[in-house]
Amino acid sequence: MSQEVQKRRRLSLITDFIIFIIFLSLVLGAIKLFNLTDEQEEQDETISEQISPLANLYTDVSDENNLFVQKIKNEYGITVEYGENTKNYVDKVSATIQNSAEIINSNIKNIYESLSKYPVNLFDIFKSGKYPMYIIILDKFENDNIALASRNKLNEYRIYISNNTKMERSFHHEMFHILEYYMASINNNSSVYDMWENLNPIGFIYQSDTSKINKEYVYDSDNCKLEDAYFVTKYSKASEKEDRAEIFAEIMVMSKRKEYLGKDGKIYLKAKNIMDKIEENITDNNFYCNRFLN
Image (tube, rainbow, N blue to C red):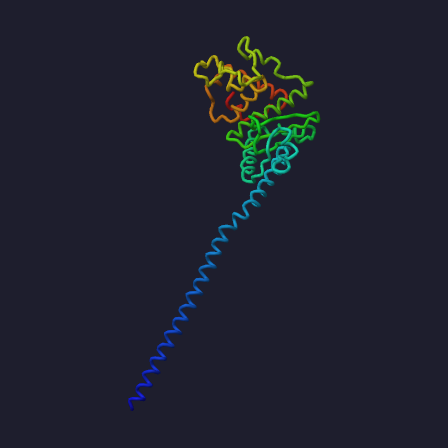
């Protein structure tokens, strides 16, 4: 074989090798690109899976809120309203609309659990249609209020309640006002607690200006002896109705009997009077709070 032929063969081999290397590089590049695309697609699917529940969260929570509205209506005869459905109320009570589905969800579950502490037959009042009741869930009040109760000339009862850390207690406080409104309405608009002043210290006068209320006779006051405790909070001293509502609310959220509910305690005597009148005028079926009074 001549040297010229050998030289051409070497050049051919080198050329083939270079072509192979180029081809191999193209193939590896294509594989890498394909894998990268797959990884990107998998990553996109993962992100999509993460976003999807969040995207559906509002719808799911809203559906659950609607479910609880229906449950409260069916079981208790009470209409719950929130969001844009409350825009006719907010100006009347100086409040703002609650639009957060998640906060509404927490609030409405709190209300549903709170209602379970009342005797079922109590709610026949509202189911009858003669005394319609509404619970209005709000964002917040523009004043110092956290909840309100009202009754109009049509005997419609409403509890306006905002999102707050003591929501259950606030609800029971306002619920007592509703019960007292009802008891007055079936007694010629007269209070059933006509002897209430006898349960207070001699000469005591309620103070409607809350800025002037002191802690005298208040249970948790440092200088108040147990035998001199007539009120569960300072706010109890604002009026007879607030006094009763505060005692009722305090006991409805209690987990164990407090010392002021001893048989000879002044607050105990008030609490018994509150529940005795409810049993006489509404129902003698058991309330949650009765476990601490018997």
